[in-house]
Length: 395
Image (cartoon, rainbow, N blue to C red; front, side):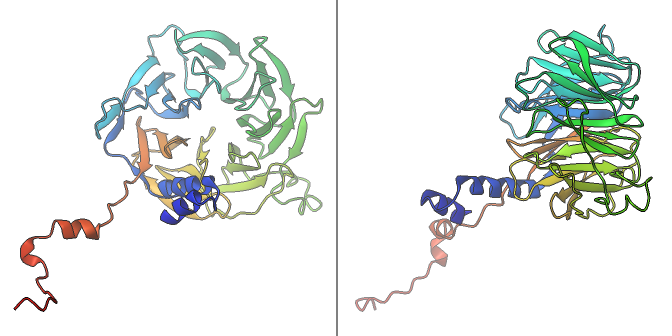
């Protein structure tokens, strides 16, 4: 660490290297924080979490009971032991509460004054944070599994929605209607996510074993259908052509630079793709247990070198290096299946939600104080000091 600081002061090194090194060290030391509790509000499992990107202070959670809770993660008490309090919630008594399980919650990317939620009750709701009233409601014919707003869009306000229908719906916040439909999947769409690099590029995952990349400006729409065999098997077997997994694909996540896409399927495999060429990078993560029948919410770190993937794995969270596939550790603390996790990049913290109704905070371990030899000498008892002297005058 001192070498990084010295090189930075001398202008010999990029200041970002120091930040990446410390962020990486902190992620590698993640542990369950026994001093920080997240107030338990949900009476059933926690399906989805999201931390707003503006301040990194407020967190949303959505549960199987249809309840949405807003938490303040800030520690105002300044005490080491504290509880992240729920500021407000859309509870069962709220007139506009979701009737069934909330599958996805997301903050509006540029302002904490608005957030979105989608549910098995076939609706997507746009909420005013200040009044906790829905500003708009989109209704669909089938169950809603996932939705996502682009974190970088400046020229559109589209929300991509994956439902029980094989068609991907694009809802426009400006017009208040579904402005576009993307056709190409054959079964329900379990996960959708916009690229953090290109505002018009969308990735979708389906129960038909396929993952598609779309440019929503194009009439044909679909740019690439990802092929796990990189075209090698398509000539021999048409059935295996252009499938990303050998089962339902229920998880998607771009790396923070948008250059790679990570997918997970019920074939117990996770795959890393080049998002420009659609090539399977063939990184081997080993068996990644995935028994979820719906969308699986996993996340990738930001600002580390290398980057890490945090993947719900039964009642634990598996931590992998994204580009080498190495399993670093398993975070244990939940009593039941983990359904979601979200990374807080400002402080390298992780929050996870589970069917045990709890939200747990995972934080970097504190550094052990290094022994200071000079300080030890200053506090040394005089009786143990070396009394030897080389002076000729002393007898």
